[in-house]
Image (cartoon, rainbow, N blue to C red; front, side):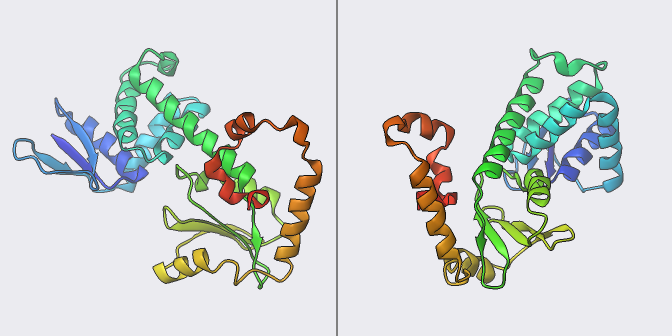
Length: 252
């Protein structure tokens, strides 16, 4: 039996519910994006059901400590195709064992979920450290990103707390959505292709008049505090990988 779901968290949790209701002996889980029909294997399409997903999530709350609920969510945000299968099998393992099963790192699914979560958390911290906003002519601060994983849900609180006194937008070009803070609350935003292209290509044209001055001041400060005699490029790249330099004003 092949379970085909849409790749959403609700769909994944619904698939877990459907499994425990039907209990097929051999099961393959895949998303609509990667599904390839097989004439020898029956396919069952998972239709998202908020009620069923809610019941599974509440059941996980009863079986997992808070840190493992976060790891589960982070692993899902990795968007790695193999992670969906590992999360599904992780749920099966958790529901068939007594509390404390997450301490068994000899289980391949426990180990896999922990590994995915660690990668996503590392990306979250790097985005929080390396994102640099640019002010537009209308006073809005914005930044375009394309992280390895879908970390926007994880960095939302950090930027809301840190930049509570200014409106801002963080937009993920890879996943085609972002978050907007209007001095009151944070909400998701979606741009059409044309607006997204304009935001990405014409960012210098819509920048405020003071933005070049701020950039110059920051670069001068960075140069003045940099000690050339202690330059260690290898160590620097290890802590600030080159793929993040595009976010840093001092690297322009």
